[in-house]
Image 1 (cartoon, one colour):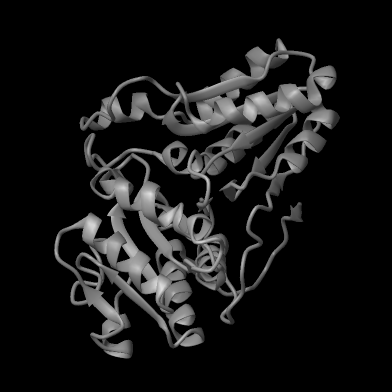
Image 2 (image 1 turned 45 degrees about the vertical axis):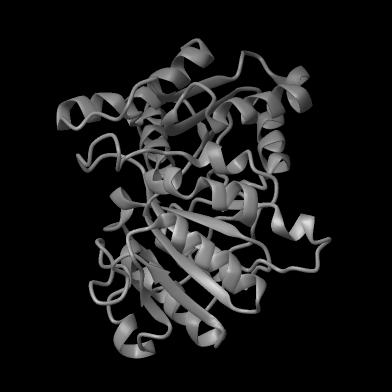
Length: 333
């Protein structure tokens, strides 16, 4: 478990932290390249790769055809033959277009070749709702990826973690998906100028607490911290845990927290049914059942596509108010 500390005095937005993570990784590894739709000339639809084409040239910043299957196939083949691709899938909703390459090639190739084939592939994609991009551009599908042996999945919530997660992923010899959050692009925070890596599979406690352990996934960390501030006014103390990596998952940090607070809640933006929260809840009851004073609470989106309408989308997404209400219900307060 890592401790939450002030890592630097320089503050930059999440979007710029992404750019730096990719930029410094390309400098570190001459065999690395970035490929995806509109990543070169346009710098991506979110502007996260602006300036990289001018710095590295068209051989290392590659605009691809509109084919996610082609992008992932390119990455798998390039990695197996000695390169270190960074792939951009733009919206994680587009996983459906390349899931065969992800599930049956990328995730399995190193196993099927007895470890002889290395797959240092980093896949960056935007997830989450909140920007009225409708049902095909707003999903949270991390559970799909977490269910595939051979893949690692990171979900950075701060600018510091966004940069550090990308660098950690590019340095890894196995395929890693870094799920970025488009609603967080404008969030600012301390980020060192030098390269650094976030420990893969290591959670961080964003706020110490004593009454209930809240495992918040992705952007829900910020909502949980807001809820914690409000509940503190009424004497309710939330411990907010940010897994940062959801595969592999830092079970030990969560269990240690639950043993202290005796209550647990998981909140994620993904649909509640069959979401990653169910797995985390199962692990808690398996390893800390005797410490629980109430059932593990789960909060997620309803079983429906993400609405386009801003008011409906707001009602669809978990937020600080619902986190606080669920915490009160779990604690019987």
